[in-house]
Length: 145
Ligand SMILES: [Zn+2]
Ligand SMILES: [Zn+2]
Image (cartoon, rainbow, N blue to C red; front, top):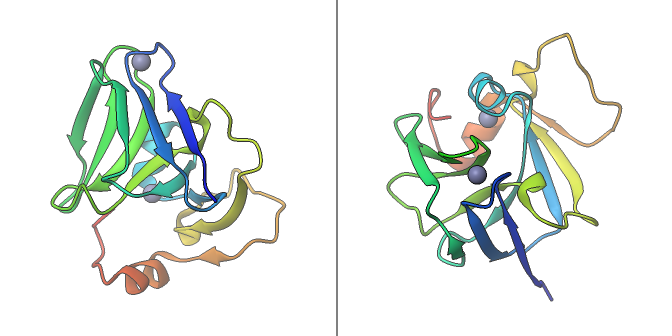
């Protein structure tokens, strides 16, 4: 049984409550995520129609690609959410460290692993999924990040 969890940005102008269906996060190494979040983007997948906004006064959405948009706090700059622009109710991908308590949420896999630069590496042995493999899984085309 999944429990409701609260989270938010650094300053508190974005606060939310959501159910985290599976206690796992993905780590994305794509160029856009690394530029956006100043490192690999570590995120949990939630249902887009499940989120309750406790405070969204700071929340802004940036259209980052043909399909996707990214949500951030316009006050403190925290990188928070990723979703499909045309189907926001389908999923809301949330920065795992924006959760107030992310304990017990474990790494499931690395995605866009073929975009990971040489200057860092992780020692875990979870699956490494390439861009082509991931896009195939979701039926998307290159450039959709
Ligand atoms: Zn903020
Ligand atoms: Zn990414």
